[in-house]
Image (cartoon, rainbow, N blue to C red; front, side):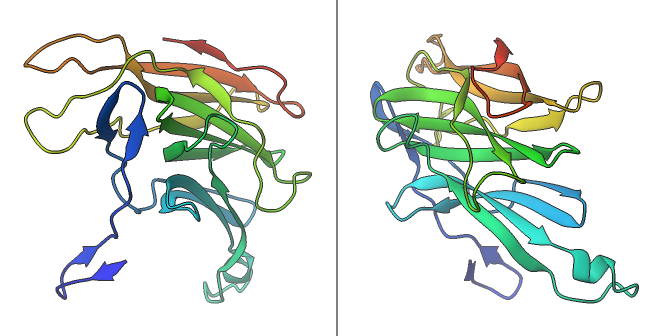
Length: 221
């Protein structure tokens, strides 16, 4: 974080994301926390960072709040219990990931929806899972496709920014604790207007996890 004027906090710029079919990059916004959920004295957060390869990557953090909750006075230290990068290496080479949203069920299974694109893929929607009881620290399971993009996305509305779909959403199915609903944006077929042809669509998927996921989630446009 770069501190500017006393009344202003500036967040360091993240590299925007490449995409197939155009040199125009997809805007990934900034480093602010995008989503949070608190359960069993743990606060889970998502944000976006620059990874060791210099690429923008979705990032999750698990904070231990038990010292504060159990103190009785609301005092104590919040500590980092775990954290990890969703790099997208299992999707394509040089994948940029962004806009992560997070949910956790009563079995401590975490699901994270996110956007991804790369020089070889269009802007697409994905989801990944972490079994917080059995998976190694700092890791998530294989990425699953919610909806793959089908065309380049360029929609600047006359400005400099190629703004992407703020934001992903995800929640536990209220009727079935093993399942999650994830919502996100994908690059839809081109639809020319106002001199540009980038179009986006909204997709949602129901992902059910009783063990490591073995197939892509059920999805809809």
